[in-house]
Amino acid sequence: MKNILIIGATGQIGSELTMTLRGIYGNDHVVCGYIRGAERKGALMESGPAEICDVTDPQAIAEVVKKHNIDTIYNLAALLSVVAEGKPMLAWKIGIDGLWNVLEVARENGCAVFTPSSIGSFGPETPREKTPQDTVQRPRTIYGVSKVTTELLSDYYFNKYGVDTRSVRFPGLISYVTPPGGGTTDYAVDIYYSAVKGEKFICPIPKGVYMDMMYMPDALNACVQLMEADPTKLVHRNGFNIAAMSFDPEEIYAAIKVHKPNFEMEYQVDELKKSIATSWPDSLDDSCARAEWGWNPQYDLAKMTEHMLQQLSVKLL
Ligand code: AKB
Image 1 (cartoon, rainbow, N blue to C red):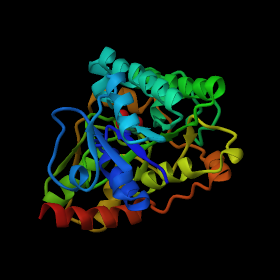
Image 2 (cartoon, protein in one colour):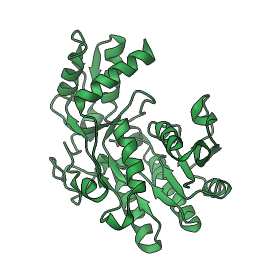
Image 3 (cartoon, protein in one colour):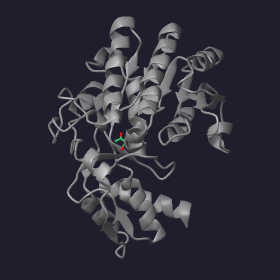
Image 4 (cartoon, rainbow, N blue to C red):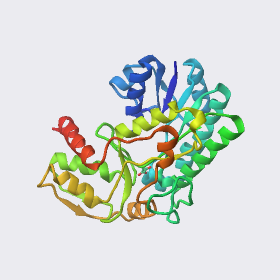
């Protein structure tokens, strides 16, 4: 039986992944690792073990790993792209010094490690459409620099020490549960909130700028499937391109208008977000993930939009 620690368990991915993994491996086998001040009431902290586990504190990580006999760590602590541009040194401290702490504890205690990478690991010189698995990675953001380093350092620990490191390059993740905080792709979540509240949406990303996106259930499946994958089938490890849908603001707006014909959108472009978004690919080629561990997303834009609007109506109205 696996014993899993999720670091950053109260964030956008962690809050749902913790509950998904508890459903699969049992509540007592999945530890919700959180930082002081991120405590919250409810199932996340009450349906299984919860421990303070700051990624910048190697001692705390080691203690939790030993106490709960952990064999798998999901390291989800990170600042997203827009916030990271305002705090580059903190982004590095959490993303890379933190990763180093996790990898050392994993090496000493025989743990497998999942640390997400991102479409942000690519840059303007990367082929924009159907971006290959192995290609140019020269990002212009500190977020991207830290994600390329995440991939390289994770591969290094696998090749040098045999630590079972694995990761995917997440696109923008869309969910009705926990909102993202400070990403370039956040507009694709915010637009649904505006639509359900009956408000006009002010779009910060220009018309015609495409980015890969994914509905959270597919992202959670990716985490579980990759960590369960047969290691002998993995040619790659850190990190796999995964893709589900690619759209620009006009396309997501049109998909919402099918259900909400009176919904309005206006552009007020945010220059920082625009410069980040236009440096990222339009769409990734995910054929290696499909071939090596059976990646097969279930949600396209239309199916996700129907589900998001239904679920947010229950949550907000
Ligand atoms: C962001 O926009 O920063 C993230 C990402 C694509 O990694 N959602």
